[in-house]
Length: 190
Length: 226
Ligand SMILES: [Zn+2]
Image (tube, rainbow over all chains, first blue to last red; front, top):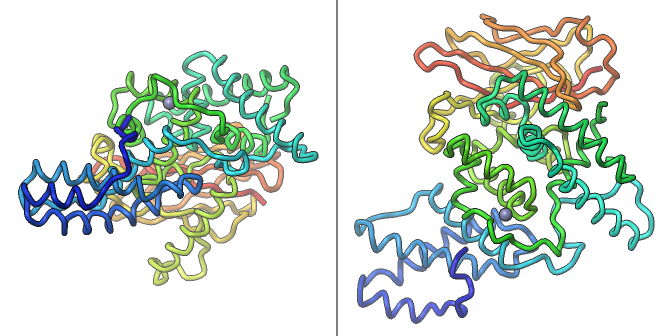
């Protein structure tokens, strides 16, 4: 977890600090802020948008610290910037929660939608049941089904886990069947 | 017991959803660790540990999905999503536009499905930033494809040979496969498709063997049966 509980970042203080070490750090700050800001805007989940300025500022501090350890003309490339944006966004995701149910990501709607309070209850029930049923799978099936639900196809799962495709396919197939049985026992239809 | 496409889709969406009450767990791995897991830079044991954590942690599930969006490599897993969820459709569309722009000179009259799949040489997987990427694209006449002429064509590489595997999306049952093809096309036998309901989603996976590089793997394309 990051040191994300600091007071809001004060750019002027950093600029003063930086003058003692490197005269150009103020300019670097602005450059990093622009570059990182683009990546954060691209990656940031919508429910975290209110915090994106903080995310950028924390990322810029990371970049400035890295730069101090590198040679003077060091510039982060785009994939490095994305990695920094990613780590700061994940830290922020762990720090903040979606404020409202409606703002939770992944537009999952239960199949039989009733009035809103019922729908919301059903939605929560299904989401929790899926996790619970997953936890009851034997380990290899849990690995296979988790990767499958994350979007990996069988060949990709096989590659990741160093399994044959046949084995990966069987584990996904049997794991999904177990999931369905488990959800049915809970009175839920996937 | 089989799950229908929309059931798997809902299961997948439910799994990826986060509730406002979800809090980080004390054992959540550092974000850098999740990045490495997605990029296949972890040992199998570490990866297993991470995936088992993700199975139980909605926050890390989201972090995993976000990590997949970081690099062009991520399109492998986006495109191989078990079903076309709503975001999947959007990516499909964006990918098709990119394909159209970059490959207008190629294969006039062919319908392009899916997105580009950067293909990675095995052994280089752990260094995804520097890995050589080849653009592999599936070129088909229509989507859905008629079962009596289910012809799959893909980007051709010089002197390459190809392995193809076709699975049913909803239960990942193997439908058909071919190995060592010398041409960049494969017609799925009609008898393999008999009995599949119209609209069945099939996942198509192509492995390219390029002399001097070795076997390179692709993501999985999705095509429907008519
Ligand atoms: Zn976690």
